[in-house]
Length: 163
Image (tube, rainbow, N blue to C red; front, side):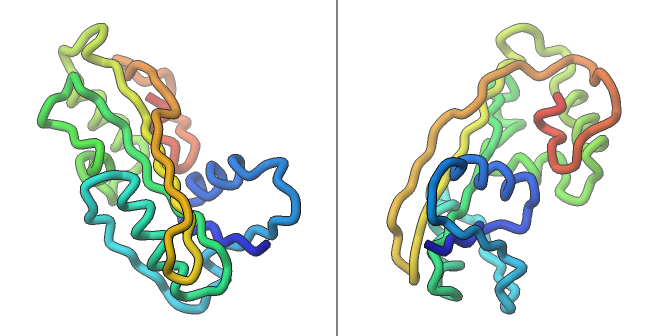
């Protein structure tokens, strides 16, 4: 079975491939193998709906199965200053990982204990030829945002996990 990982984000691709470990007879493909530049606007109301939309749209360009994802960190202590659907937009999509960390740490200034609690939600969707086959969304990690970064050596695309 041919399976296309429906993201250009290296971290997300690695994360999705890790879910497939141990499955036999799957040949993994990546978006750079498709000639068309595919852009899918993430404008749905839920992470699961965004993942489904991406899988459906991308699957129209190939006969392979397409696995797409969407994820977000929920930080209830920030109230309306933070939206699980807009993590990157909130911290600044074009900022460096260090700048994103610094922005989030400053945004959380003054919050203590449970107000620093966060959950990571991951949604996955599988589609083929423009047809949805499966979707999933769940909390995959729970933690607390640190008050001060331990170091500035942030692995690429992992700024949120760094805090």
